[in-house]
Image 1 (spheres, rainbow, N blue to C red):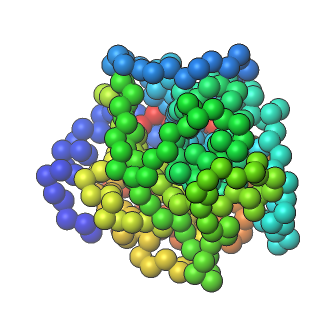
Image 2: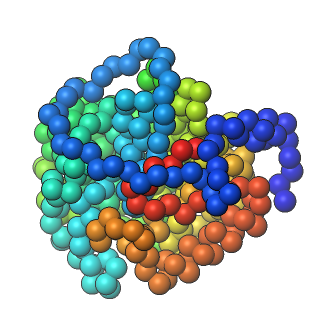
Length: 325
């Protein structure tokens, strides 16, 4: 069992910010949003407080509503079929943005945080940015890909890790991270974009492009760490100590001690939320579909978190359900 230190004790005893029931975290079903006219992302200055909700959109995607402001993380709603879950993966699958799925759910957004630029994290981002006027934060690859899609440079903010961005009622700290490895100790579509390419046409045109994590701290509310892939540069996590960690499921065992290093680096968060465990090529319908192999990995992950960090609560999320930490 990890030792109890003063910082952790003080954080845990301040857990009244989390709304918890006997069965787990309080949750309510999200109400579908209505499409609205795109608006430029505001530049916040004043400190404001209000309700904070977190809605999972599958994969590593989240909608976070902080009072009247919306922050998106890796929003991938089109969920196109690449054959990845049927054993017939097609790297030449066309990038097809489904406005009919996106528009009812994204009527507004202030910022979009991109962990990396694989299709299941970035594909819908340019459409959302142009529709809402949201500012997109991501790697230099995300910046150049955004330009390729016609997103104005004034809406694209390249970051690399170490930045602390102040939005008035919340801050976002950018954390350098790593992408997960497959059984061959490699990854799909490696590479970066150091200049503006032609507009991507297939999923292979969206490389990993380096990987980031994001720590969201809400004024008077929770601190939440978002991952988009299952590897970790644990030395970059020192001092973050989030209340909640959104943790990507490990898809291979080639990354050593992933969960022990991640959880220790984050100072054993009060709540651990597994993500990126679902079949993200199906519709957003509960219960989230999970492939048999991923179900086994998910169960193993839950058991490992409870063993490594027994004081952490494990919350397996459902789609579009509002969680209040």
